[in-house]
Every structure is written in C-alpha cells, then in structure tokens.
Amino acid sequence: MEKVDKVEVLISEEQLEKRVREIAEAINEDFQGKEILLVGILKGAVIFMADIARRLSLPVTMDFMAVSSYGSATKSSGAVQIIKDIEMSIEGKNVIVVEDIVDSGLTLKYLLENLWARGPEDVKTCVLLDKPEARQVEVPIDYKGFEIPNQFAVGYGLDYDQKYRNLPYVGVLDSL
Ligand code: IMP
Ligand code: MG
Image 1 (spheres, rainbow, N blue to C red):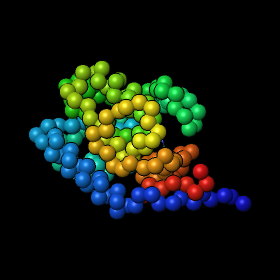
Image 2: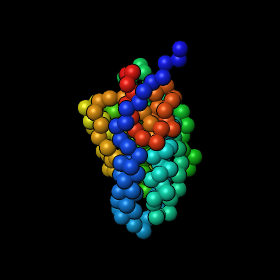
Image 3: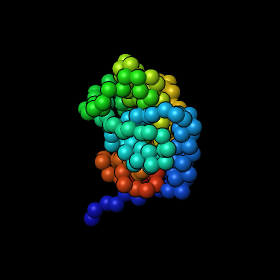
Image 4: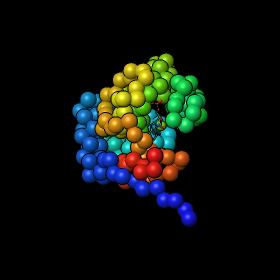
C-alpha cells in the first residue's frame, strides 16, 4: 500500500497572507521612488515571490537564479554552484533576493557575495522562513517572514523530494 505522508500545519494560509502584506508594505515604503529587481531563488521562492510581487506598488522587474549546494541531502557543504543565472545585468540596480528559507546560511551568503561583485546599487534579502538554530554563518535578513524551529518545512514553495510545493500553507511532515 502506498504510504501517504501527513503534513502538520505550522503556518496557516491566513498567517502567510498577513505577513506577505506586511513585508510588501515595508518594501514599498523603504524603496519609495525607486525601481527594484526581485531575484527569486528557484524553485522554493516562486510562490512567496509571486505573492509579494503582486502587493508591490513600485516599478518591479523579476529574474530568477537556481543554485545547488554540494553535500548530503540534509547537510549543505557550503560549496554552491549556479545552475541558472539571472539574465539581466544588476549594475546600479536595487536588488532584493527572495529566498524560501535560510538554514545554515551558506547558500544566501554565497549568493550575496556573488551578486555584490556585479556592482549593484544595493542588495537586500527577503526570506520566508528562518531557522536560526541551524545557522553556521551569519547572513543579513532584511525582510523576514517567520522564524521556525529546526524542523523540515514543506509547502508554499518548499519541497520534500520535489513534492508539497503547492500546499497553500507551511507544514512539517509527520514522518520526518
Ligand atoms: P542553507 O544553505 O543551509 O541555508 O540552505 C538553504 C536551502 O536548503 C534552502 O534554500 C532550501 O532549498 C533548503 N532547505 C533548508 N531547510 C529546508 C526545509 O526545512 N525545507 C525545505 N527546504 C529546506
Ligand atoms: Mg532554496
């Protein structure tokens, strides 16, 4: 018989919607009169970024990057490889990197160093979930959705084995 994983709700749709609205309002205020480029990190940030973007009242462009980190399934080694790069130049631009989750911090640290080297005006970070207990390197999180305990989260873009990204809430798997 096929085993069905049960997902326990950690952050509800209503909580997500409220926080997304608050973050978008903060970005609208902080970047008044400016244009911003949202750089979403595939695939986990897609749903969060789509929801944030629709609430921004600034001139917005969007691009995406995909990275993979070497290491085991649960431990990242810190060596990050760009699988897909953004298509536009970020020179002189106000960039906001949108990530699904910061765990060890190694992925975001690499991304920030990489993007800063391209001569942008500014690079800020917007992260849905933060697992502070798992942090190995400090990274700045300018706009943060929620802090969560050191558990494996799925839904609202986050996957386990490429599944559960479509859940409208953030949950944890019973079986993990
Ligand atoms: P870091 O480099 O250790 O901060 O790892 C960040 C990346 O690992 C995220 O962008 C996710 O793709 C993945 N990740 C870390 N924790 C989780 C989780 O709880 N659920 C799903 N993906 C996770
Ligand atoms: Mg990711």
